[in-house]
Image 1: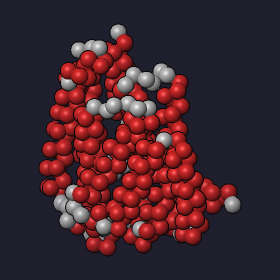
Image 2: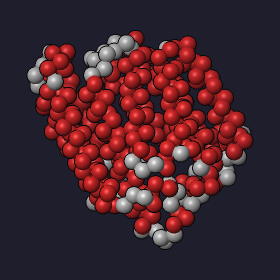
Image 3: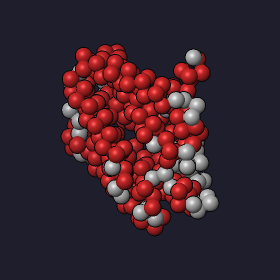
Length: 296
């Protein structure tokens, strides 16, 4: 019983719940992160949405079981390996998803609508959107924008359009790099076409992905610079020094590119976040400088 529970939790990919930290962005950027009520709401939203996302992961793993068995890493997942039976996985995921949606509906109606949209979008993604080149990455990016929207709606925070744009472009940046590294891994393997677990990987090529990554890198940085230079944003934070955070954002993006092209990482963003010390220190320093220019 305990082993089944452990496999079920593993299938919910708790280590990837870090993606849902985007829910905290509105609270942080609205300077409400020191207010207990906002912290409680954001933490509750993070937990509930993580349960929803975890359930979707399980549904996707059940749907992609045969394809995942062909992937050098995904084949070790509990469902793909057969360690966790599909009926057990689906039954548990359905219960958790239903309970989570009920709790979300009682918590915040806008949050509920976004959660439903997220679920429907993932269903469409699993069935055919993931097979459409470029759109497959854009759908994932929209998922991150929805996370930010959740953070804004639960606290009635009006979001800057540039925050949403930066989130969208940053997510595309990460998604393109993930596709690139998956393609590199396949090209370095036995060269068997059956090893390609994403149909779109057959349509992508390294040259195209490298060009798209270059474009997204530039637009992401430019969008962030526009955000920190926006008069409305500067007025809200009562400072003209937000530009001091730009070097940390530039370093973070460039460091990620370095780890991708020189170290062969990038297929798993969470791995970089928790394993690369310079990258983690840079995030902490960005946060420290951000808070310093606002409060001092």
